[in-house]
Image 1: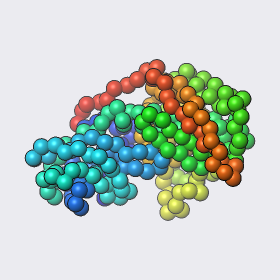
Image 2: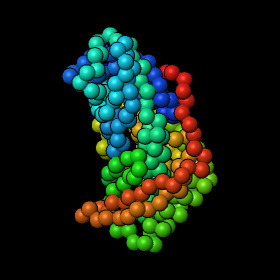
Image 3: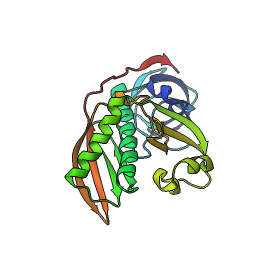
Image 4: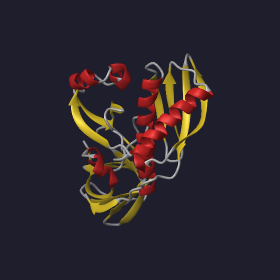
Length: 253
């Protein structure tokens, strides 16, 4: 089991350095007792960076895993179980993912309100561009313009992003389950990490990394739309330069 430090609170997402202990080694995969590296999941791509141990540093090229998080490094890593390491996240990639993922929440929440409860049925978060799959809908140019105007208006307002821990029942009492995709979460998960934008502009269970204020996003720009069949359309977007970008917190966790 790896403790995921980025889940402690939103501010932990702004840290890029942490200390940890190697608990297992499986070939090129290093398991740590704690990590700031985000593993592939929830549509969000993994973090990259370095691990520095007793014999120097190695590049982390891939991160996967739900319980034990595997950090893929080069073959000559020379690490052993019990070694103390210092991890450093590639900040530009991490921050791009934070901005993109928060933008996805905002767009998805507004689309639900504007277009008769259209659901987000998939997403892919990358550093330079991202996409959201909606169903059922067929966007025309007027609808896309309406969605983008509403999105960028909220960004201009600089709404706060917050997190909390809620039970499924408490969440369902506030938001319709189809809006939060509650049916995709295993019934065994009873407590949820919930990300909220403003006064419930969006409110959704999520284990990803996010910014703390929409002003950090910059405006959303539409890259295109594409039919994926059976009433599903893919909406692709990128972000302009942030209005109020934040830098990392260099304190070591």
